[in-house]
Length: 392
Ligand code: PLP
Image (cartoon, rainbow, N blue to C red):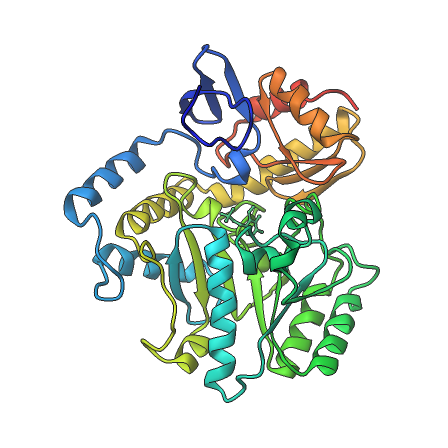
């Protein structure tokens, strides 16, 4: 009997991981077509990251961010800045995507308060969305099964109906504008630029983000782009916002930022947002925010993404995967780059069947799975994914 409080009744014991492969204690090899939970961008088992991490432990293992910064954190924020779609970016590192959402929510309230609008305390999201599993993040997320046991603790925020695949580009913008007008207390809107787990990689119609951004700007409402799943090259651009020339006021990231080597999330504010709140005036923080080892790992991951051209590679490998899926008879394939939603019928059953065939996929909606392998995946490994998927 295990003393671990597991997430699943029968977890597989992993003992090794390299590239796109995970090995269990029985020696069975699994092709990781989901990078865990669409996390692992640079592939498993990179020695360069292990060495960087060890060196940072030996230099400065931990200091509290209420007192210290570190050279490695400063270097990371500087190196990341040119890739971010956020103007004059200021990075607040945390320990995961949900913490990044919590930070963005508080940041929005702090910003509105600082500009004399403390009554603006509502965050608006979309019904079909996922922003995390802590309470504010879950309250923004339209995931009925995750919400159901905790509904008593939820209900503070507002979700507008529908998914990214709205009937026309201006539909959500019009919905948002009427919520803003009716309530008078909206601080921010949060959305995934390209849908993730809750919509199976849904893509917005042309002009969707321009329309939403225009409404936010007109009403002094912050636009938060949740790029926890889509950031760091996953969709064939550094950030999915880039596909739509979107410049959010706040951006959240996680997953691919440290590629799973360290639990890292990022909340990035524009200079205008950060300066309005004022240095040292944001009442927020966690024991492990601004962690030097997280920054060292993230810098090593960033350098690998840059030096190996993984953003462009995600675009071309994604095209290859889509072509192969089409040839195999999968008709309904969405997403962009190496974030690929596939309609499979019963997503839970297909996920189990795939695992039995040595293939790891990520169940998204009831009928769709997500594929999101490491961006380093080879064409022959992509062919193997399609070979191992149960035929439609
Ligand atoms: N936002 C999005 C878009 C996500 O996909 C996720 C996780 O899947 C989160 C937030 C929450 O991140 P985490 O699980 O690291 O807390």
